[in-house]
Each structure stands twice: as structure tokens, then as C-alpha cells.
Image (cartoon, rainbow, N blue to C red; front, side, top):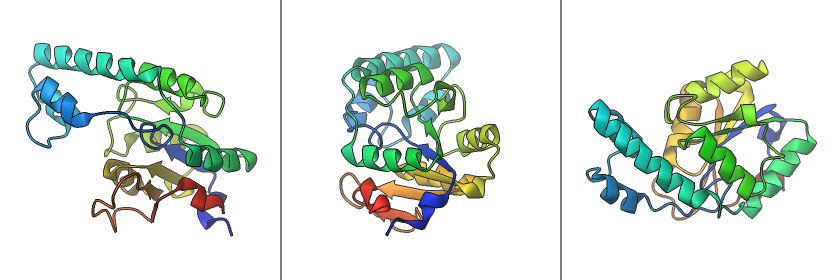
Length: 196
């Protein structure tokens, strides 16, 4: 039996690791940029002096772009997105990448026909997750209350952004459970479980 969330009219997806197979080595990026420990990369960079911040963001842009053209769609995400499209749901993407890189990634992975370009938000269009701004933006654009939205991701920031916005939240666990029980409304191993 399909999950009751399928009746919600607005779905917002994280990109890397959710719609696409994860390939980003964030530990290597932290080392490259000099980000201490497990600090949030974008949060740490935003606190640097202006010139350094600009240089670091440019390095992140290059790093993201280098991975974009080899992006591959997650099979379980295809099943879910196909089911949602057949139901007429509004679909968006909220990523911590730049919008340009997101569109390039989605194109490489074969996702561009599923998401209108104006419904793809990056870190320059909305405050980075876990801030809820991107969900509010897309909900307002679609004329939907946050309680009509579902945020789908593979990292705790995705669930926290959804919860802060008042949306339902789904986390797909691509590796271990990471202790995220209680962070999302639904935790699962395979997104296609929502449509079975």
C-alpha cells in the first residue's frame, strides 16, 4: 500500500545522495579548504573574512563542477519521482550546491525533465539547509502551505530544514543509521518503499 505522504502535493528533494549516487568526499574537501574537524563546511566558510570567503567558495564551485558531469541517478529515486509525477505533484530540488552546478548535475543524471529549472534552488537562492528558507520559497511559489510539503533527503540537515519549515520529512539511509532516529517522520533504506 502506498505511503499516505504520496497524497501531499509538493515534494522537495535534496540532490547529492538522494536523487544522485553519492560521490562527494567531504572529508577531503574539509582538508583542502582547512575546515576544522567536522565543522559545517558552508557555515565555516561563511564566517571567514570576505576575500578568503570568496576564494574558498570559488574552490568549492570548482570541486562541485568537477563531479557534476558524471552524476548518476539513484534507481529508487526514479521510482518515487515517477510515481509522484503520475499523481501531478509539484517537484523541486533544494541543494547546498550552486544552482548552476545543480542544473548541470541533474542534466547529467537525466533528471532535468522531472524538475522545472525555476524549482531548483541552490545556496545562492536560499539560505543553506538546515535553514528552512528554500522550502518556504518553493511552497510560496507553488501556492502550498508548508504542511502540504514533503522534504526528502539523505542527511540530517535535510530533515531539520523540513521540520523547521513545518513540512513532512523523509530520510533515506544510504549507509548506516547514523543515530538519526527521531530526526525525520520516515526513515527508510530505499525510496521506492514509499510507493510499494
